[in-house]
Image (tube, rainbow, N blue to C red; front, side):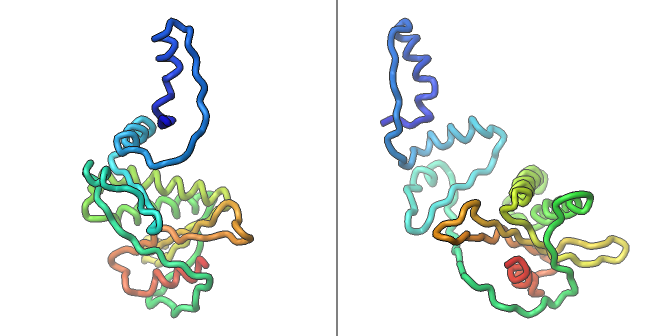
Length: 212
């Protein structure tokens, strides 16, 4: 079998080599993990401006990552917790307003722009701020588009700041599967983030409960 990405020009090359006499048929065989060099080639062709890439595997199907590590990728392990019931939690120790993001009008522009700024402010230390802004805006635009399709939304903790109005100090997204499976739709919390100046105030747990 041959990876689909490698047969995109096969018919053109085949005709060129045989003077237009040869033909071929292609049919699906199976899915399998592709080699690292092909993954890099496909991603680079589709999104040449990208400078950061991430791949994910489930714990019960970790995949073969040695090729990625050999090419300079870093492996990070993340724990994913799940529950069917979100318990009642204490109110945060900071006087904030918890609410979903607006989806239209000037309020929406303010909310989603504030989320991009919060994403930049809480980025990892290894990322340069100037480079991270482009990534943050594109990611927020993706989240916003999903919210418009009814697949979820973001929730924020807004603190009233004198002479400045509401300030987004913490946020999280929650998104659901497009189609139910076995009568249920799984939801996933997305990128819980809190401004460093307002951590350990109970904002994250309050947002988890508010978004449930």
